[in-house]
Amino acid sequence: MARLKEKYLALKPELQSALDIKNVMDIPALEKVVISVGAGFAMKDNKLIQNIEDTITTIAGQKASTVIAKKSVAGFKVREGMPVGVRVTLRGENMYNFFDRLVSIALPRVKDFRGVPRNGFDGRGNYNFGLQEQLIFPEISYDSIMQIHGMNITVVTTAKDDKAAYTLLEKMGMPFTKGGSN
Image (tube, rainbow, N blue to C red):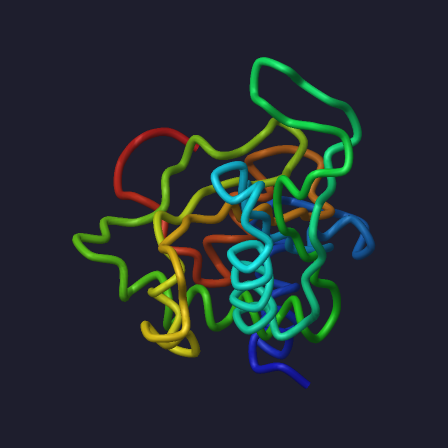
């Protein structure tokens, strides 16, 4: 069992009292984590797309998949069937392992890190934020990457509103910026 999942189970009573929840089944929890990379810059280079896919697979601990364009868009020089990104959805044990590595190892390695922004909530209890480069993860070797790229991370929770999701993520160790509202 993941260390973070054990921590979450120990946090449930604290979350219940902090959010004033009567029903135990209404306590917010992590549902899934989605890691995605928009790779429009690498559409015509299959080796670069494969390298991005391998990198995200290494970071996530689960096979990533290439996203294929469904429609042609002339303005972006995209043709139907071209690879336009890479994504992976983590649930269960892999989700907790990734979230733990993200919070305790990767985010502290970001240069001049002051915390993740508080304005990434979507109004339904989900949180989005972006990372500038994949090199903050210790499992990525600088020699193995062809190009530095960022990624978008979406944390989907069972919380019904942003306040509950913020409280859940903060108690699970997500380093939010100081000050501001939430």
